[in-house]
Picture (cartoon, rainbow, N blue to C red):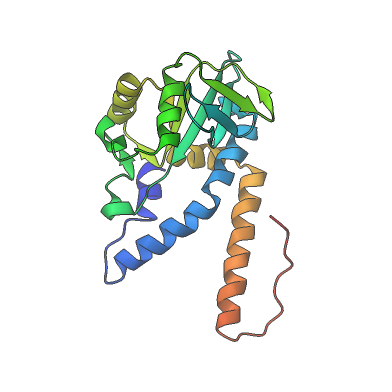
Length: 210
């Protein structure tokens, strides 16, 4: 799916830029749901325990990240943050190829995430109101190369780097019913909106829910 996934967003033509911005923002609305569905599937390497709140030593506040992954094979637990910057700066960060592509993430929440990757002394992680012992951190990106994955893991200390590209590939290969339902529902919502804006008055399909 590699070239196909990237080609969904990167096209040539007169409206290529506007198209890329629109589709990237649209995908970003539900991309976290895709990762959650993947992690809920027993065939996935990790399961999601919920959103973690990470507090580093000396910090005035904690920061809530995207996922808490538990590796099914080992039971080890990792905090996780997703950065899916597809169209941003003309696709500069879409495919992770080098560790320096993370340099622009300077906010305190990302620093707390990096501290978790290196198991900073005194840092605490809460999930569902309970303190959880963690073993590091996992980054989720849009798409990655093997060299980029290796470089980021080595230089940043992440236990793993996952890609939405590969996650979608897994879900397609598994014929995940929840993934299919998610996409069909969002497609129906978009069709209802655009048909309504065009003044079309046909009966809208039944909304199956989120």
